[in-house]
Amino acid sequence: MTSSDPRPADAATRAVHAGRADLRRLGVHAPPLDLSTTYPFESLADAVGSLDAMMAGDDPTEAGGPVYSRLHAPTVARVEAALAALEGTEAAVAFASGMAAITAALLAARTADKTHVVGVRPIYGTTDRLLSSGLLGLDVTWTDAHGVAAALRPDTALVVVETPVNPTLEIVDLADVVAQAGGPDGGVPVMVDSTFATPVLQQPARHGVAMVMHSATKALGGHGDVLAGVVAGSAAWAARLRSVRILTGAVLHPLAAYLLHRGLPTLPLRVQRMQKTATALAARLAADARIGRVYHPSLVPDHPLVGPGRQMSGPGTMLSFEVLGADGTADTPAAFNAAGAFLGALRLATPAVSLGSTDTLAQHPAGLTQRVATSGGAVTAGLIRLSVGLEHPDDLWADLDAALAAASGEQGAASGG
Image (cartoon, rainbow, N blue to C red; front, side, top):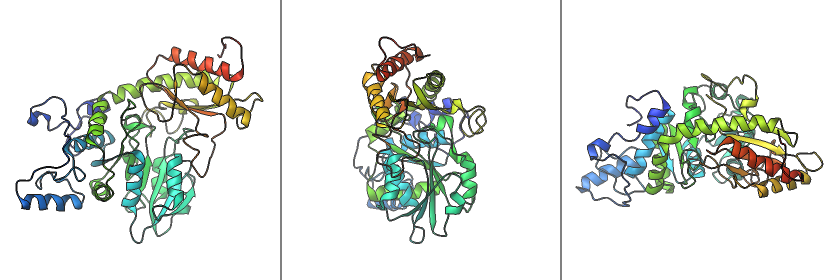
């Protein structure tokens, strides 16, 4: 199934069948894993034609074959077709990691006379660091989601935004950002990091976003064993992205592509189950006196951007909450120590970075993922980010409750709400 094929509207069906259009012709049921690094060619003319096509960012299939896996790999192309189908875009380009994908998108947008980027904060810490570092030769103006129009310049190449925001789960109105940037036709292109939402809950291209980026290491891979990134968008953007990938070598290994594709059929089921549990846990945490602020879109009554028919169809699988210190504060050394004690007392949830895995992961943004950011935003010393897995919600709550008891110095089991 290519992104231009007629395809079922339901995400569950697309997740199962996308990227498998050539299997019947190949005479196989499961997508094959092709580990070749180089490919024989029938003639020099075929090889030259393929190379020319790939250097232009085009698919070499019709031109004479892959030639070399840094240029094109059939297993990677298969999962790219699947991801484009899930996002509802013409194409998708896969990379060796999420940060490789973001870097490629920035380089693809940059031209000789367009070297300015508008960055919308808050945003993932390493993205913040990359944009602030000057490493890519870009001039960056930071703003919030309401200041995009005022931050634009004649040399603006791209607007970069993340929603839901890591780790405080604010939802950015993508249609509004695109409108501020001049609209989808002729305006400054907008790239969104949609990792937290996944294409199950949000398809930013529907709102005029030019490039949709995912750290596919997370929920798209879903099993903690794949490092990957993807950018989905138009065929024209895909050609530019492939050209960057060829020159920089930030290619996705076929084995990672195979595992990523293998996990996609269960993505809608995983997201829906995790979201239900996350919503239940958020409500219990919000009622617990040992907790400060709790961040989850389900806690915002009648959220204008979350719900059936809205930008994000559900509140998602991620939540964050503040563990209070012994002094009752959330942003002091006491809160930092309480957060550390909480993480150390977990027995079911795993204290680890990353997210979207089948098991629940808990981490400390201020000390880890957001530590590298040049702007901390609302990230407090006691904040814990939870990536909810597939465990039973009662078992997860028992684990969180016991860890909160340990963090607050309670004796015995906590009542915890």
